[in-house]
Amino acid sequence: MPGYWKPFHVKVHECVLVTREDALTFSEELRKAFPRIRFVSDEYATKFFDVDAWHQAIDEAERNGRATPRRLDFTRDPTGAWPDYFPSLADVLETRFRVWIEPRNWRPRWRLRRRDDLLTLDNQPQLYFTFRRSNYSLPDPRRRDGLHGDPHLPTDNLESVPDLIDRKEPVLLEGHRMLGGWNKGDDVAKAFIHKVWRILDKMSTNRLVAVDRRTFMPIPPDGSAHPEPYVRASLDALVWARGPRHNYLAWGNHLYKPEMYFKWYRPSDEVDDDDAIAKPAKAARKRPVARSARPKATASRRVAGRRA
Image 1 (cartoon, helix red, strand yellow):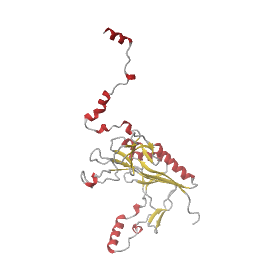
Image 2 (cartoon, helix red, strand yellow; image 1 turned 120 degrees about the vertical axis):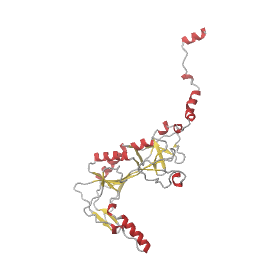
Image 3 (cartoon, one colour; image 1 turned 90 degrees about the vertical axis):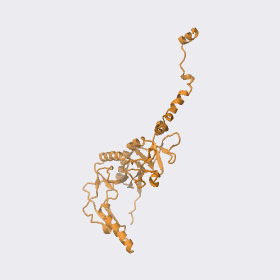
Image 4 (cartoon, one colour; image 1 turned 30 degrees about the vertical axis):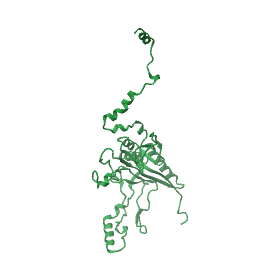
């Protein structure tokens, strides 16, 4: 159809590191800037599907050699129903959100796309972006081989900090993508996306220290921070990562620590041996004092030395 396709601009943060406290703060700032903002599940049409009946029908069709049933055959009529709204991005019942500005006098108009086997909103608000809250994970292989602890415990997509096998076990706060966009020439949507990104930028930073995934040592060795263009870490996530040594911020296979972390951290802080902790102090006592730092002899001290 002529004129159907329009150039689309995308703005993305590949990795947004937030805790639930950060997500709540972000929600409050968004609500101050946009009073009609709504937090919706990214899969907002799922509540109209009878998922259990659909899976049961799939199993029965596989046993009898029939065609796989379509999901829309197990969908109740959504006419007059609204998608579920959540109070904030920190809600415990959802982690994947679609955040939009609800127009005045807006009413949802649902559409059954039978060719694609989908149920969608035919009049979804145009000012929106997608957001997924961070989660905790445990990459320690001992959790899976059964040598320590319970190998059946979940290790991914955890909402709260899990119990550890020992204090050297790494715990990751994994960030996810935040995505928005606008059609070419749509200045209103463009201004909306840019304002949302500015709100997040004010409560986060991209200056982080990269950490080697195997040795857990900083890259480069001096522990200096560098800006990561696609990563944003918010305040409470940075506070969490500044805590125990095994707390790390993660994006895929990349690990990070907050800026200046390795400037004040010492490996001996987590060693139980008192002698190992005292070694730096003993070395400092044996170090010779520089000539410029020695106290200068006064005239009275010189006279006293001659008389003696």
